[in-house]
Length: 365
Image (cartoon, rainbow, N blue to C red; front, side):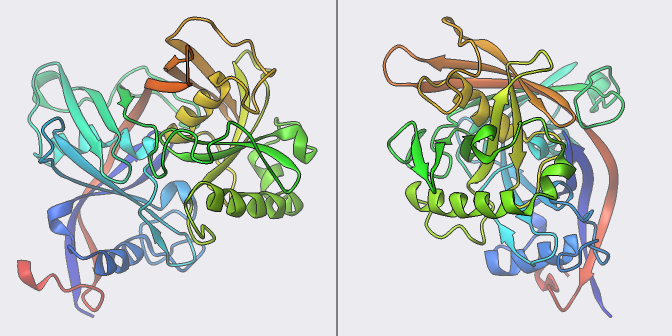
């Protein structure tokens, strides 16, 4: 079997991991690109045994980077979520955890030069239009991965990557409130549909007879809940202007409850057909916005501050994630900016191989 070699960097970004590519080393047309990414990941088998995926939605993610022609940005970041088993590729969402590795990967690829002990990388999320500034530690002109930053869901410590997000409202829809209301009733369940970094359908845990403190495993085994959730998610997708979302990972779904571990609010996040073992960065931004939005399903679950920016600590199955959010609550609710600190680590680099029958890359031979 002839094979095609594709240069790549394999990285953990936040609590996700996957291959990072230079976009120039991949096919231009989306149909061929999708087939390449399916082969790269090994989608079609629950263990992704014939690819580099890890048999879980947080390990079947792909980042594609290029120098940006945007006047503001340095790097364009195109994200793809590849399904574990269904051989589907979704380009609608972005991923904030994988984003944590974009700055380091761009430097490693030579797409941007270091500028001192800390290098600022301005990133445009191609999928959603969001603008992100990443502060990457680069002492001695190289990316530093060693540090004392801890993030829930990842063992050990690493160097911090500080992320600041703007232009996050209406990532895939018409705006922050794509249904035009702060709450909607679907199948007898009150939900808040928000689009801040990620389109999200949010409900109270108690509305499903849940506490909101269940483990990811307990929720994954609750087939009755997942069936109800999926029905609501699909109907919410229509209301949010996303059309038929039965084969799309957006909108995502989340449930909220009162905090019990010293955080601001307890959360559980779904990807959407499996429970996230921690928390997505994009989902965290949207959940923080929901917590701060007057009249949302989070109303009464926390004491909302009067002054912004404010830190929102979201409790999740393996710990907490802190979100620094700046909102405008004086007139119509709006989100100005969001900041988080994550980590990333380079795991491997070199060439990744796919069958030439999938893509021969004749142009580069």
